[in-house]
Amino acid sequence: MIKHWLILGLLLKVMVVNGQQQGLVTQYMYNKVSVNPAYAGNTGQKTITAHLREQWIGIKGAPSLQMVSFDMPFMGSDNGWGLNIKRSSVGISSKTSISGMYAYKIPVTDGFLSFGLEPGIQNFRMNFGDPDLFAYDGIETDESLNGKSVNKNSFLLGFGAYYRNEKAYFGVSIPSFFTTNFDIDQNTIKSGDELQVNLMAGYALEIRDDQMLMIQGFSRYTSSYPLNLDLNATLLLDKKFDIGLGYRIGSGVLANLHKSVSATFGLKITDNVFAACSYDYALSALRYNQIGSFEVMASYRFPGKTPFNPGLNPRFF
Image 1 (spheres, rainbow, N blue to C red):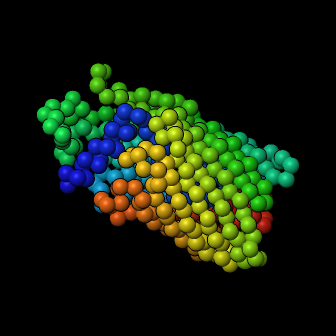
Image 2: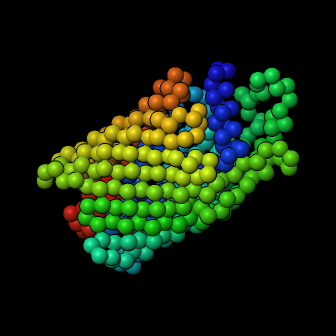
Image 3: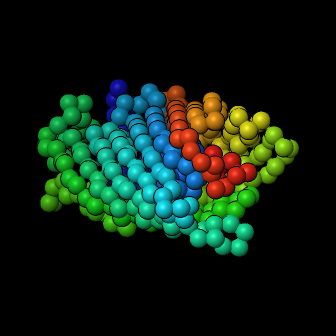
């Protein structure tokens, strides 16, 4: 138990002193609208997606993330709107946000370029009255362990751009331009959100009529985590099964460049229902204290008219 809380102490130090990142996901490719508002309406259908991630199973207070996203086109295929609801927690802190999205798409060369905005509101909580929280390393008094709780609200304003053609996509997004500080105490600790930039890209290689290999990458950048990169290769079989492998590198906690490897399995259950699950195996020193990270998602595309992008796999584009 003490070992778990020592690790949690490291996580809280990174969060409180250096700022917080947006939630980490392995299956970003299946829910792009959750990380880039410019994707809203891009599939041409009403779509709702639920996403759950439990990180570092076996460590008490480890990161946890839940998301629900909805998006659809409106007023033709050039406009899209959507909604994101997210909750993330680690240790004694949690963040809950709700945001709306608007995207506008224009044709360029052989593809489409979309721009999106995402205004919203976020609630930040930190419970210093948690009975499991204690001082360690010989510190008899810790000003942060005063039993007080923090409950603060802040505004969000995100931006995104997304380009895609029949074989590739590229996107850039900023979850929020606001870098709000939440004062826990006037003279001690502060916590807040840093400016974060997300980059995503993918390229499709058609092997046969019923097989496609998708190479994808997703990178997150903040001043506290200058390097954070996911690389994924996913094989689509018979337009129904997805089998993927991933590799994550990055700076940050425990200063180990090689973070994890992952395996993902997806299944198109019906024409409108898709589900996927993944498992991450840690490569850093954290692998000795937990059994891995698990992630599941499910999406439903409402029946309607034929999407404006026939021939493209909406799970990737």
